[in-house]
Image (cartoon, rainbow, N blue to C red; front, side):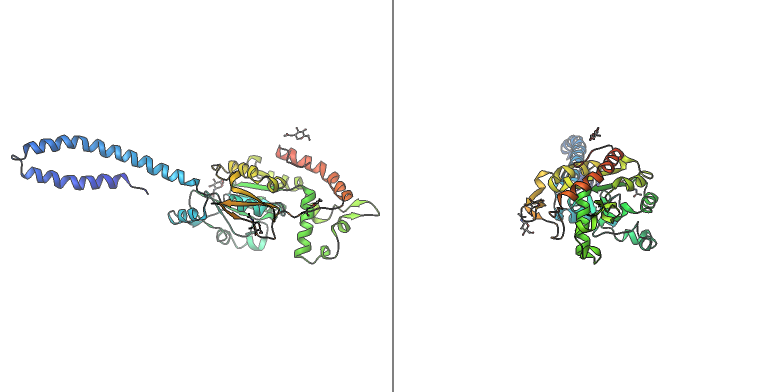
Length: 342
Ligand SMILES: *[C@@H]1O[C@H](CO)[C@@H](O)[C@H](O)[C@H]1NC(C)=O
Ligand SMILES: *[C@@H]1O[C@H](CO)[C@@H](O)[C@H](O)[C@H]1NC(C)=O
Ligand SMILES: *[C@@H]1O[C@H](CO)[C@@H](O)[C@H](O)[C@H]1NC(C)=O
Ligand SMILES: *[C@@H]1O[C@H](CO)[C@@H](O)[C@H](O)[C@H]1NC(C)=O
């Protein structure tokens, strides 16, 4: 409820002026009353001013404090009361696939100051989409209020050599989030994903058969899911366009076991109030991962998402860990931070 001060002053004056006129017509006989009225007039103005100040303060804080509500209903109501439009994103989750991009977007999307796009726009890395222009892109965005942060995620941006330049061209101060999982787990997750969704060699061969040659005892490092887990190679391209402080690196392996901690970091990075906290997550035993808890209702990701129990033979896991180690170190040096895996 926002009551404008000017409206209040107008209403008060409108009531007051006829009243004074009435008394003026009856000047002599009502002299005493008029004196009283004048005396009261002296108090009316400061009272109005004080009321205005109080109302101003009230409406100011009533706009600030309802942010504490993590409900879809609140967000809908908010959209009805603002200049709701589709806006270009001011934050993009740029990668990586199978690292929790969807979970991260869903989790941060419950923050009332964030509006998230559905699906993956896949705009900046695909020439066919990019050529459709910015109007096409904006149409992929959700309705948002002017004070909200619009976000989208398209995990293949990270690997594109054109996406950094194109995103920079759109907004060079944009905030980017990169979520990365332990590269051993990410490689296996991508293998499983390919086996489920494509009919390539993954359909016929096990992970071990594809990534490890028993005879030569060598890792097939050219296998795309493995090559795509050497994160530093791709990050350097982004750092040519964006300073590190514009890129937040979230730990996908930690998001699975400790989502609250990762969400606090993302809220801080986006300059948001820390509204999403420990109380908003509940571990679901059946699913094997955390679900959101809002207004004592739990909201889980679709069943095809989330943490699968990925595992491979000890020998291969050890070989892969050894292979990734120097690249991980280079990646950690680039981002000036160590993540939960080595
Ligand atoms: C660019 O991104 C920054 C950071 O999120 C944001 O504050 C700004 O409004 C964006 N500019 C435009 C034109 O969208
Ligand atoms: C856990 O997940 C299962 C399967 O999606 C669902 O049926 C159940 O309601 C969830 N439990 C809680 C406490 O959220
Ligand atoms: C997950 O894999 C580990 C071994 O890698 C095994 O000990 C554990 O029982 C598995 N959990 C489930 C739920 O399959
Ligand atoms: C990361 O860990 C390495 C040791 O593995 C250490 O030398 C380095 O100082 C750490 N870096 C940061 C930023 O904490």
